[in-house]
Length: 41
Length: 456
Image 1 (cartoon, one colour):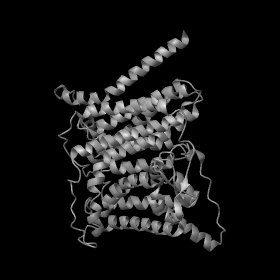
Image 2 (spheres, rainbow over the protein chains, first blue to last red):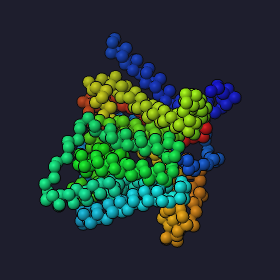
Image 3 (cartoon, each protein chain N blue to C red):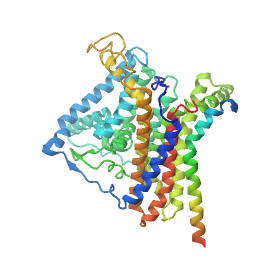
Image 4 (tube, rainbow over the protein chains, first blue to last red):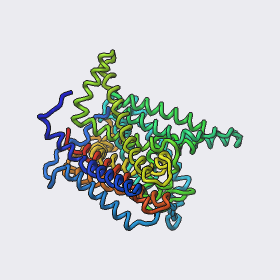
Protein backbone atom coordinates (compact mmCIF):
# COMPACT_ATOMS: atom_id res chain seq x y z
CA UNK A 1 0.00 0.00 0.00
CA UNK A 2 1.43 3.36 -0.95
CA UNK A 3 0.41 6.92 -0.17
CA UNK A 4 -0.38 8.30 -3.56
CA UNK A 5 0.50 12.00 -3.64
CA UNK A 6 0.53 11.81 -7.43
CA UNK A 7 -3.14 10.87 -7.30
CA UNK A 8 -4.11 13.64 -4.90
CA UNK A 9 -6.76 14.82 -7.35
CA UNK A 10 -8.56 11.49 -6.98
CA UNK A 11 -8.77 11.39 -3.22
CA UNK A 12 -9.40 15.11 -2.87
CA UNK A 13 -12.48 14.65 -5.05
CA UNK A 14 -13.48 11.72 -2.86
CA UNK A 15 -13.10 13.83 0.28
CA UNK A 16 -15.30 16.52 -1.30
CA UNK A 17 -18.22 14.09 -1.21
CA UNK A 18 -18.04 13.79 2.55
CA UNK A 19 -17.55 17.47 3.43
CA UNK A 20 -21.32 18.00 4.01
CA UNK A 21 -21.25 15.20 6.60
CA UNK A 22 -18.25 16.70 8.36
CA UNK A 23 -19.82 20.19 8.26
CA UNK A 24 -23.08 18.85 9.65
CA UNK A 25 -21.37 16.92 12.45
CA UNK A 26 -19.33 19.98 13.43
CA UNK A 27 -22.53 22.09 13.55
CA UNK A 28 -24.28 19.37 15.56
CA UNK A 29 -21.38 19.11 18.01
CA UNK A 30 -21.29 22.89 18.56
CA UNK A 31 -25.09 23.03 19.00
CA UNK A 32 -25.10 20.27 21.60
CA UNK A 33 -22.13 21.77 23.43
CA UNK A 34 -23.90 25.14 23.64
CA UNK A 35 -27.12 23.56 24.84
CA UNK A 36 -25.36 21.60 27.56
CA UNK A 37 -23.57 24.75 28.73
CA UNK A 38 -26.88 26.62 28.77
CA UNK A 39 -28.53 23.82 30.78
CA UNK A 40 -25.68 23.84 33.32
CA UNK A 41 -25.74 27.61 33.60
CA UNK B 1 -18.46 -13.25 -8.03
CA UNK B 2 -21.11 -11.96 -10.41
CA UNK B 3 -18.99 -10.02 -12.85
CA UNK B 4 -21.37 -8.85 -15.53
CA UNK B 5 -20.57 -5.13 -15.76
CA UNK B 6 -23.06 -2.78 -14.16
CA UNK B 7 -23.18 -0.81 -17.39
CA UNK B 8 -19.70 0.53 -17.86
CA UNK B 9 -20.10 4.10 -18.97
CA UNK B 10 -18.46 7.49 -18.99
CA UNK B 11 -20.36 10.62 -18.05
CA UNK B 12 -19.31 13.51 -20.19
CA UNK B 13 -21.90 16.28 -20.23
CA UNK B 14 -22.75 16.92 -16.59
CA UNK B 15 -23.24 20.65 -15.97
CA UNK B 16 -21.48 20.52 -12.57
CA UNK B 17 -18.88 18.18 -11.04
CA UNK B 18 -20.26 14.92 -9.66
CA UNK B 19 -19.32 15.83 -6.08
CA UNK B 20 -21.48 18.94 -6.26
CA UNK B 21 -24.46 16.63 -6.78
CA UNK B 22 -23.54 15.19 -3.37
CA UNK B 23 -23.61 18.64 -1.81
CA UNK B 24 -26.91 19.44 -3.51
CA UNK B 25 -28.37 16.16 -2.26
CA UNK B 26 -27.25 16.98 1.30
CA UNK B 27 -28.91 20.40 0.96
CA UNK B 28 -32.15 18.78 -0.20
CA UNK B 29 -32.09 16.61 2.92
CA UNK B 30 -31.50 19.56 5.25
CA UNK B 31 -34.28 21.60 3.59
CA UNK B 32 -36.61 18.55 3.76
CA UNK B 33 -35.77 18.17 7.43
CA UNK B 34 -36.65 21.80 8.18
CA UNK B 35 -39.85 21.51 6.14
CA UNK B 36 -40.85 18.38 8.08
CA UNK B 37 -40.16 20.09 11.42
CA UNK B 38 -42.39 23.03 10.43
CA UNK B 39 -45.11 21.43 8.31
CA UNK B 40 -45.47 17.95 9.84
CA UNK B 41 -46.33 18.47 13.54
CA UNK B 42 -48.43 15.30 14.08
CA UNK B 43 -47.71 11.63 13.31
CA UNK B 44 -49.49 10.71 10.09
CA UNK B 45 -48.15 7.30 9.12
CA UNK B 46 -48.60 5.33 12.33
CA UNK B 47 -52.26 4.33 11.83
CA UNK B 48 -52.71 1.60 9.24
CA UNK B 49 -55.46 3.02 7.02
CA UNK B 50 -56.57 0.71 4.20
CA UNK B 51 -59.50 0.40 1.81
CA UNK B 52 -60.22 -2.48 -0.57
CA UNK B 53 -60.10 -2.07 -4.33
CA UNK B 54 -63.60 -1.38 -5.67
CA UNK B 55 -66.03 -3.73 -7.44
CA UNK B 56 -64.60 -6.91 -6.00
CA UNK B 57 -61.32 -6.49 -7.90
CA UNK B 58 -59.37 -6.81 -4.63
CA UNK B 59 -61.04 -10.12 -3.79
CA UNK B 60 -60.54 -11.46 -7.32
CA UNK B 61 -56.84 -10.60 -7.32
CA UNK B 62 -56.27 -12.37 -4.01
CA UNK B 63 -58.59 -15.28 -4.74
CA UNK B 64 -57.58 -18.91 -4.34
CA UNK B 65 -57.38 -19.68 -8.12
CA UNK B 66 -55.10 -16.68 -8.71
CA UNK B 67 -52.97 -17.74 -5.73
CA UNK B 68 -52.66 -21.29 -7.12
CA UNK B 69 -51.74 -20.06 -10.61
CA UNK B 70 -49.13 -17.60 -9.26
CA UNK B 71 -47.67 -20.26 -6.96
CA UNK B 72 -47.48 -22.72 -9.87
CA UNK B 73 -45.63 -20.11 -11.97
CA UNK B 74 -43.18 -19.62 -9.08
CA UNK B 75 -42.59 -23.36 -8.74
CA UNK B 76 -42.11 -23.68 -12.51
CA UNK B 77 -39.53 -20.87 -12.55
CA UNK B 78 -37.64 -22.37 -9.61
CA UNK B 79 -37.66 -25.76 -11.33
CA UNK B 80 -36.52 -24.23 -14.62
CA UNK B 81 -33.71 -22.35 -12.86
CA UNK B 82 -32.44 -25.50 -11.17
CA UNK B 83 -32.78 -27.59 -14.33
CA UNK B 84 -31.01 -24.97 -16.48
CA UNK B 85 -28.26 -24.64 -13.88
CA UNK B 86 -27.61 -28.37 -13.77
CA UNK B 87 -28.18 -29.32 -17.42
CA UNK B 88 -27.49 -26.12 -19.36
CA UNK B 89 -24.31 -24.57 -20.73
CA UNK B 90 -22.04 -23.45 -17.91
CA UNK B 91 -22.00 -19.83 -19.02
CA UNK B 92 -23.04 -16.80 -16.98
CA UNK B 93 -24.74 -15.02 -19.86
CA UNK B 94 -25.98 -17.95 -21.98
CA UNK B 95 -27.68 -19.87 -19.14
CA UNK B 96 -31.06 -18.91 -17.67
CA UNK B 97 -30.04 -19.45 -14.04
CA UNK B 98 -27.52 -16.62 -13.35
CA UNK B 99 -29.43 -13.87 -15.16
CA UNK B 100 -32.75 -14.99 -13.70
CA UNK B 101 -31.48 -15.25 -10.12
CA UNK B 102 -29.21 -12.20 -9.97
CA UNK B 103 -31.10 -9.82 -12.26
CA UNK B 104 -34.74 -10.74 -12.83
CA UNK B 105 -35.49 -12.22 -9.41
CA UNK B 106 -33.10 -10.35 -7.10
CA UNK B 107 -33.34 -6.92 -8.74
CA UNK B 108 -36.48 -6.99 -10.86
CA UNK B 109 -38.75 -7.93 -7.96
CA UNK B 110 -37.63 -4.87 -5.99
CA UNK B 111 -39.41 -2.23 -8.14
CA UNK B 112 -42.36 -4.61 -8.59
CA UNK B 113 -42.68 -4.89 -4.80
CA UNK B 114 -42.46 -1.13 -4.33
CA UNK B 115 -45.15 -0.47 -6.94
CA UNK B 116 -47.50 -3.46 -6.64
CA UNK B 117 -46.94 -4.61 -3.06
CA UNK B 118 -45.82 -8.03 -1.89
CA UNK B 119 -45.94 -9.81 -5.26
CA UNK B 120 -43.27 -12.30 -4.25
CA UNK B 121 -45.59 -13.69 -1.57
CA UNK B 122 -47.96 -14.73 -4.36
CA UNK B 123 -45.25 -16.26 -6.55
CA UNK B 124 -43.09 -17.66 -3.73
CA UNK B 125 -42.37 -21.27 -4.80
CA UNK B 126 -41.43 -22.44 -1.30
CA UNK B 127 -44.66 -21.06 0.18
CA UNK B 128 -46.68 -22.62 -2.65
CA UNK B 129 -45.11 -26.05 -2.15
CA UNK B 130 -45.31 -25.74 1.65
CA UNK B 131 -49.00 -24.86 1.55
CA UNK B 132 -49.78 -27.59 -0.99
CA UNK B 133 -47.96 -30.21 1.12
CA UNK B 134 -49.66 -28.97 4.30
CA UNK B 135 -53.08 -29.18 2.60
CA UNK B 136 -52.30 -32.67 1.34
CA UNK B 137 -51.07 -33.80 4.78
CA UNK B 138 -54.17 -32.34 6.46
CA UNK B 139 -56.43 -34.08 3.97
CA UNK B 140 -54.74 -37.46 4.33
CA UNK B 141 -54.55 -37.27 8.13
CA UNK B 142 -58.05 -35.69 8.32
CA UNK B 143 -56.75 -32.69 10.22
CA UNK B 144 -54.93 -34.78 12.79
CA UNK B 145 -51.53 -33.11 12.36
CA UNK B 146 -49.20 -32.07 15.21
CA UNK B 147 -49.03 -28.29 15.72
CA UNK B 148 -45.80 -26.64 14.55
CA UNK B 149 -43.17 -25.66 17.09
CA UNK B 150 -43.36 -22.22 18.59
CA UNK B 151 -41.04 -19.86 16.73
CA UNK B 152 -38.42 -18.60 19.24
CA UNK B 153 -38.96 -14.90 19.93
CA UNK B 154 -35.22 -14.20 20.07
CA UNK B 155 -34.79 -15.54 16.54
CA UNK B 156 -36.90 -12.74 15.03
CA UNK B 157 -35.66 -11.87 11.56
CA UNK B 158 -32.13 -13.17 12.15
CA UNK B 159 -32.59 -16.19 9.83
CA UNK B 160 -33.60 -13.79 7.05
CA UNK B 161 -30.57 -11.58 7.77
CA UNK B 162 -28.33 -14.67 7.62
CA UNK B 163 -29.98 -15.80 4.38
CA UNK B 164 -29.49 -12.45 2.66
CA UNK B 165 -25.89 -12.34 3.88
CA UNK B 166 -25.27 -15.81 2.40
CA UNK B 167 -26.84 -14.71 -0.89
CA UNK B 168 -24.62 -11.61 -0.95
CA UNK B 169 -21.63 -13.82 -0.19
CA UNK B 170 -22.43 -16.00 -3.16
CA UNK B 171 -22.91 -12.97 -5.39
CA UNK B 172 -19.95 -10.88 -4.26
CA UNK B 173 -17.47 -13.25 -2.62
CA UNK B 174 -17.62 -16.80 -4.02
CA UNK B 175 -15.38 -17.13 -7.07
CA UNK B 176 -17.83 -19.57 -8.68
CA UNK B 177 -20.96 -17.80 -7.44
CA UNK B 178 -22.09 -16.99 -10.97
CA UNK B 179 -21.63 -20.54 -12.27
CA UNK B 180 -25.04 -22.01 -13.23
CA UNK B 181 -24.35 -25.35 -11.57
CA UNK B 182 -23.35 -23.67 -8.28
CA UNK B 183 -26.51 -21.59 -8.34
CA UNK B 184 -28.68 -24.64 -8.99
CA UNK B 185 -27.11 -26.54 -6.09
CA UNK B 186 -27.48 -23.49 -3.84
CA UNK B 187 -31.15 -23.22 -4.83
CA UNK B 188 -31.68 -26.91 -4.03
CA UNK B 189 -29.93 -26.55 -0.70
CA UNK B 190 -31.87 -23.42 0.21
CA UNK B 191 -35.13 -25.10 -0.80
CA UNK B 192 -34.39 -28.09 1.43
CA UNK B 193 -33.57 -25.84 4.41
CA UNK B 194 -36.71 -23.80 3.82
CA UNK B 195 -38.95 -26.89 3.65
CA UNK B 196 -37.45 -28.25 6.88
CA UNK B 197 -37.92 -24.89 8.65
CA UNK B 198 -41.50 -24.61 7.36
CA UNK B 199 -42.22 -28.14 8.61
CA UNK B 200 -40.88 -27.21 12.04
CA UNK B 201 -42.35 -23.74 12.53
CA UNK B 202 -45.26 -23.63 10.12
CA UNK B 203 -45.37 -22.30 6.56
CA UNK B 204 -46.68 -18.79 7.21
CA UNK B 205 -44.56 -18.17 10.33
CA UNK B 206 -41.35 -19.11 8.52
CA UNK B 207 -42.33 -17.12 5.43
CA UNK B 208 -43.04 -14.03 7.56
CA UNK B 209 -39.86 -14.14 9.64
CA UNK B 210 -37.27 -16.63 8.48
CA UNK B 211 -37.41 -17.09 4.72
CA UNK B 212 -34.85 -14.58 3.52
CA UNK B 213 -36.37 -13.51 0.21
CA UNK B 214 -39.92 -13.26 1.56
CA UNK B 215 -38.77 -10.98 4.36
CA UNK B 216 -36.50 -9.02 1.99
CA UNK B 217 -39.18 -8.28 -0.62
CA UNK B 218 -41.83 -7.77 2.05
CA UNK B 219 -39.76 -4.93 3.51
CA UNK B 220 -39.71 -3.16 0.14
CA UNK B 221 -43.40 -3.87 -0.44
CA UNK B 222 -44.21 -1.89 2.70
CA UNK B 223 -43.36 1.25 0.73
CA UNK B 224 -46.11 0.41 -1.72
CA UNK B 225 -49.63 1.86 -1.66
CA UNK B 226 -50.97 -1.66 -2.37
CA UNK B 227 -51.49 -4.21 0.40
CA UNK B 228 -53.33 -7.52 0.68
CA UNK B 229 -55.35 -8.08 3.86
CA UNK B 230 -57.58 -11.05 4.65
CA UNK B 231 -57.47 -12.30 1.06
CA UNK B 232 -58.34 -8.92 -0.43
CA UNK B 233 -56.10 -6.42 -2.24
CA UNK B 234 -56.52 -2.79 -1.20
CA UNK B 235 -54.91 0.62 -1.06
CA UNK B 236 -53.15 2.40 1.75
CA UNK B 237 -51.09 5.55 2.17
CA UNK B 238 -47.65 5.13 0.56
CA UNK B 239 -44.92 4.45 3.17
CA UNK B 240 -47.55 3.66 5.84
CA UNK B 241 -46.77 -0.06 5.68
CA UNK B 242 -43.31 0.45 7.20
CA UNK B 243 -44.33 1.94 10.56
CA UNK B 244 -46.45 -1.22 11.06
CA UNK B 245 -43.30 -3.35 10.83
CA UNK B 246 -43.08 -5.45 13.98
CA UNK B 247 -39.82 -4.51 15.78
CA UNK B 248 -38.43 -8.03 15.96
CA UNK B 249 -34.83 -8.96 16.81
CA UNK B 250 -32.67 -9.05 13.70
CA UNK B 251 -34.52 -6.31 11.83
CA UNK B 252 -31.68 -3.80 12.17
CA UNK B 253 -29.21 -6.55 11.28
CA UNK B 254 -31.16 -7.45 8.16
CA UNK B 255 -31.35 -3.88 6.87
CA UNK B 256 -27.65 -3.36 7.62
CA UNK B 257 -26.87 -6.46 5.55
CA UNK B 258 -29.03 -5.08 2.74
CA UNK B 259 -27.29 -1.69 2.68
CA UNK B 260 -23.83 -2.97 3.64
CA UNK B 261 -23.66 -5.59 0.89
CA UNK B 262 -24.57 -3.06 -1.83
CA UNK B 263 -22.09 -0.58 -0.35
CA UNK B 264 -19.35 -3.20 -0.42
CA UNK B 265 -20.18 -4.07 -4.03
CA UNK B 266 -19.68 -0.41 -4.93
CA UNK B 267 -16.56 -0.15 -2.79
CA UNK B 268 -14.85 -3.00 -4.65
CA UNK B 269 -14.62 -0.70 -7.66
CA UNK B 270 -12.81 1.99 -5.70
CA UNK B 271 -9.11 2.73 -5.44
CA UNK B 272 -8.86 2.26 -1.63
CA UNK B 273 -10.17 -1.30 -1.87
CA UNK B 274 -8.14 -2.15 -4.95
CA UNK B 275 -4.93 -0.94 -3.34
CA UNK B 276 -5.51 -2.71 -0.01
CA UNK B 277 -7.19 -5.99 -1.01
CA UNK B 278 -4.18 -7.53 -2.85
CA UNK B 279 -2.08 -7.06 0.30
CA UNK B 280 -4.74 -8.73 2.45
CA UNK B 281 -5.08 -11.59 -0.02
CA UNK B 282 -1.30 -11.99 -0.07
CA UNK B 283 -1.31 -12.13 3.74
CA UNK B 284 -3.71 -15.10 3.63
CA UNK B 285 -1.78 -16.70 0.78
CA UNK B 286 1.39 -16.50 2.85
CA UNK B 287 -0.43 -18.50 5.52
CA UNK B 288 -1.15 -21.37 3.18
CA UNK B 289 -4.41 -20.49 1.43
CA UNK B 290 -4.70 -20.91 -2.31
CA UNK B 291 -4.86 -17.64 -4.30
CA UNK B 292 -8.56 -18.26 -5.00
CA UNK B 293 -9.49 -18.89 -1.38
CA UNK B 294 -7.28 -16.04 -0.16
CA UNK B 295 -9.17 -13.66 -2.45
CA UNK B 296 -12.52 -15.07 -1.33
CA UNK B 297 -11.59 -14.64 2.32
CA UNK B 298 -10.46 -11.07 1.60
CA UNK B 299 -13.77 -10.28 -0.06
CA UNK B 300 -15.69 -11.96 2.77
CA UNK B 301 -13.91 -9.75 5.29
CA UNK B 302 -14.70 -6.74 3.10
CA UNK B 303 -18.36 -7.71 2.98
CA UNK B 304 -18.49 -8.13 6.76
CA UNK B 305 -16.71 -4.79 7.09
CA UNK B 306 -19.30 -3.13 4.85
CA UNK B 307 -22.17 -4.46 6.96
CA UNK B 308 -20.46 -3.46 10.22
CA UNK B 309 -19.73 0.01 8.86
CA UNK B 310 -23.40 0.57 8.02
CA UNK B 311 -24.43 -0.78 11.44
CA UNK B 312 -21.94 1.56 13.14
CA UNK B 313 -23.28 4.54 11.19
CA UNK B 314 -26.84 3.70 12.24
CA UNK B 315 -25.86 3.18 15.87
CA UNK B 316 -24.08 6.54 15.81
CA UNK B 317 -27.43 8.13 14.92
CA UNK B 318 -29.22 6.10 17.59
CA UNK B 319 -26.74 7.02 20.34
CA UNK B 320 -26.89 10.65 19.23
CA UNK B 321 -30.70 10.57 19.40
CA UNK B 322 -30.51 9.06 22.87
CA UNK B 323 -28.15 11.81 24.02
CA UNK B 324 -30.83 14.49 23.56
CA UNK B 325 -33.01 12.88 26.27
CA UNK B 326 -36.45 11.33 26.29
CA UNK B 327 -35.58 8.38 28.50
CA UNK B 328 -35.35 5.76 25.76
CA UNK B 329 -32.70 3.06 25.74
CA UNK B 330 -30.43 2.81 22.69
CA UNK B 331 -31.84 -0.65 21.92
CA UNK B 332 -35.41 0.70 21.95
CA UNK B 333 -34.48 3.62 19.67
CA UNK B 334 -32.61 1.28 17.31
CA UNK B 335 -35.75 -0.85 16.95
CA UNK B 336 -38.10 2.13 16.69
CA UNK B 337 -36.22 3.68 13.78
CA UNK B 338 -35.12 0.50 11.96
CA UNK B 339 -37.97 0.79 9.44
CA UNK B 340 -36.61 4.17 8.28
CA UNK B 341 -33.57 2.36 6.85
CA UNK B 342 -35.70 0.46 4.32
CA UNK B 343 -36.05 3.36 1.82
CA UNK B 344 -32.29 3.86 2.13
CA UNK B 345 -31.77 0.19 1.27
CA UNK B 346 -34.10 0.70 -1.69
CA UNK B 347 -32.16 3.80 -2.79
CA UNK B 348 -28.89 1.87 -2.63
CA UNK B 349 -30.23 -1.10 -4.58
CA UNK B 350 -32.04 1.04 -7.16
CA UNK B 351 -29.14 3.39 -7.78
CA UNK B 352 -26.36 0.82 -7.71
CA UNK B 353 -28.02 -1.87 -9.82
CA UNK B 354 -30.05 0.37 -12.12
CA UNK B 355 -27.95 -0.28 -15.21
CA UNK B 356 -27.55 -3.98 -14.39
CA UNK B 357 -31.33 -4.37 -14.40
CA UNK B 358 -31.89 -2.19 -17.46
CA UNK B 359 -29.16 -3.80 -19.58
CA UNK B 360 -28.71 -7.38 -18.39
CA UNK B 361 -32.43 -7.68 -17.66
CA UNK B 362 -32.97 -7.66 -21.43
CA UNK B 363 -31.17 -10.99 -21.46
CA UNK B 364 -34.38 -12.65 -20.34
CA UNK B 365 -35.75 -12.27 -23.90
CA UNK B 366 -33.14 -14.54 -25.47
CA UNK B 367 -32.96 -16.79 -22.40
CA UNK B 368 -36.73 -17.41 -22.55
CA UNK B 369 -36.19 -18.99 -25.95
CA UNK B 370 -32.96 -20.74 -25.06
CA UNK B 371 -32.85 -21.23 -21.26
CA UNK B 372 -30.16 -23.91 -21.38
CA UNK B 373 -27.94 -21.99 -23.77
CA UNK B 374 -27.84 -24.97 -26.13
CA UNK B 375 -29.24 -23.42 -29.28
CA UNK B 376 -33.02 -23.82 -28.91
CA UNK B 377 -35.41 -21.06 -30.04
CA UNK B 378 -38.75 -21.74 -28.34
CA UNK B 379 -40.35 -18.30 -28.81
CA UNK B 380 -38.25 -17.10 -31.73
CA UNK B 381 -36.38 -14.58 -29.57
CA UNK B 382 -33.08 -16.45 -29.18
CA UNK B 383 -31.25 -13.94 -31.38
CA UNK B 384 -32.36 -10.89 -29.39
CA UNK B 385 -29.42 -8.66 -28.49
CA UNK B 386 -29.00 -6.41 -25.46
CA UNK B 387 -29.56 -2.78 -26.43
CA UNK B 388 -26.98 -0.73 -24.53
CA UNK B 389 -28.32 2.53 -25.99
CA UNK B 390 -31.57 2.29 -24.00
CA UNK B 391 -30.22 4.85 -21.56
CA UNK B 392 -27.16 7.08 -21.68
CA UNK B 393 -24.51 7.62 -19.03
CA UNK B 394 -25.67 11.10 -18.02
CA UNK B 395 -29.33 10.07 -17.80
CA UNK B 396 -28.27 7.10 -15.68
CA UNK B 397 -26.46 9.42 -13.28
CA UNK B 398 -29.53 11.67 -12.94
CA UNK B 399 -31.72 8.63 -12.23
CA UNK B 400 -29.23 7.39 -9.66
CA UNK B 401 -29.05 10.76 -7.88
CA UNK B 402 -32.86 10.89 -7.97
CA UNK B 403 -33.15 7.43 -6.38
CA UNK B 404 -30.66 8.32 -3.66
CA UNK B 405 -32.29 11.63 -2.77
CA UNK B 406 -35.86 10.29 -2.90
CA UNK B 407 -34.96 7.28 -0.75
CA UNK B 408 -33.29 9.40 1.91
CA UNK B 409 -36.09 11.98 1.99
CA UNK B 410 -38.56 9.09 2.49
CA UNK B 411 -36.34 7.80 5.30
CA UNK B 412 -36.37 11.24 6.92
CA UNK B 413 -40.17 11.32 6.73
CA UNK B 414 -40.48 7.91 8.36
CA UNK B 415 -38.00 8.73 11.12
CA UNK B 416 -39.63 12.13 11.77
CA UNK B 417 -43.09 10.57 11.95
CA UNK B 418 -41.91 7.89 14.38
CA UNK B 419 -40.12 10.48 16.54
CA UNK B 420 -43.35 12.49 16.82
CA UNK B 421 -45.17 9.31 17.84
CA UNK B 422 -42.79 8.20 20.59
CA UNK B 423 -41.51 11.48 22.09
CA UNK B 424 -43.93 13.39 24.30
CA UNK B 425 -42.36 16.73 23.41
CA UNK B 426 -42.29 17.72 19.71
CA UNK B 427 -39.17 19.85 20.18
CA UNK B 428 -37.35 16.88 21.67
CA UNK B 429 -38.58 14.73 18.79
CA UNK B 430 -37.11 17.15 16.25
CA UNK B 431 -33.84 17.47 18.21
CA UNK B 432 -33.49 13.70 18.33
CA UNK B 433 -33.72 13.71 14.56
CA UNK B 434 -30.69 15.98 14.11
CA UNK B 435 -28.61 12.86 14.56
CA UNK B 436 -30.73 10.82 12.20
CA UNK B 437 -30.31 13.63 9.67
CA UNK B 438 -26.54 13.35 10.11
CA UNK B 439 -26.83 9.61 9.42
CA UNK B 440 -28.98 10.23 6.33
CA UNK B 441 -26.54 12.82 4.99
CA UNK B 442 -23.76 10.29 5.63
CA UNK B 443 -25.60 7.54 3.76
CA UNK B 444 -26.37 9.95 0.90
CA UNK B 445 -22.76 11.07 0.55
CA UNK B 446 -21.56 7.47 0.72
CA UNK B 447 -24.09 6.34 -1.91
CA UNK B 448 -23.15 9.08 -4.37
CA UNK B 449 -19.42 8.57 -3.81
CA UNK B 450 -19.80 4.84 -4.44
CA UNK B 451 -21.70 5.59 -7.67
CA UNK B 452 -19.35 8.31 -8.82
CA UNK B 453 -16.15 7.97 -10.79
CA UNK B 454 -14.24 9.54 -7.87
CA UNK B 455 -11.61 7.28 -6.33
CA UNK B 456 -12.06 4.65 -9.03
